[in-house]
Image (cartoon, rainbow, N blue to C red; front, side, top):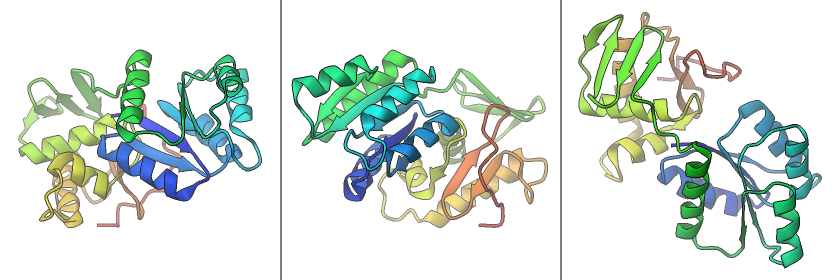
Length: 240
């Protein structure tokens, strides 16, 4: 539903956060230190940053100050073990939108993430009509037009297309797509996602063998490139 960047040097914690946020429908990236996180915000324009304070090199306060000094107003949720009042005051003065101390409850964190995204108007909900290339997606009617003519998609093909649209050009892993479109059914395999992607390309791309919009990100998953999507990701269409 939204693109979220986690800046956290604890790999185990970052993995848990990413897993829960992806299950909740978000596209998630992880940066392992402050400098990497700052670069990821500037280049990737996420909808929300979850920021640890105690990072190697550039700490979380420095990352936040640098973002605000650059005029970048991305919402920031500080997630840290530092729970003193002075730490919280400093975080809010530098421009944090919320402050959560470790240990924390996952459900509470997800609720805070949703609240921040809702306030920022970045909850990732698609518009009534989405377009890319000569394709028009009408969400309310669950219909798709290509060059003005209706294209018949199966329910799962349509849901898969919408899952890609929601990510606004961000990468969707096969696992995330499986969970979002097919739920937690064990019978669903990653090849099922690949097969449905191939069908979407056949129906919506001018040249399915060399797709321009429904793209494969090597060893990661898929992304939908529209006129608004970034193009600086190394891509290949030969992965399936």
